[in-house]
Image (cartoon, rainbow, N blue to C red):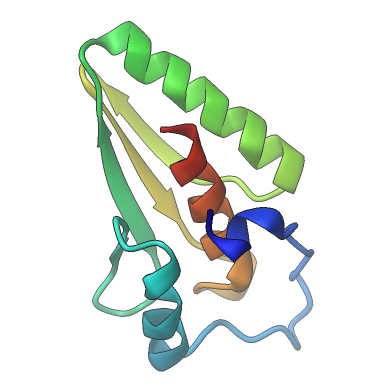
Length: 110
């Protein structure tokens, strides 16, 4: 299990809380190898595949529980047979450790 999955998200609305640099974000990717880092290093994404819509929807609901527990909410795209997850820290317009923590916790759900 990733050490990130054992951490808790911390509030980062403070303007003194800078987003990760592209190098920092790239370094963090080793903890969540199935995820993709956007070209500008401001967003994480991953597609999870399922056998049908109801299973995909149930998985999205499980992600919602994790998001509420961590107070860090991804954007989700639910469709037949898949859930696409997007993570970014909107308040700092980039990535923070919180995004990687939530990604690691989501990985434990699958």
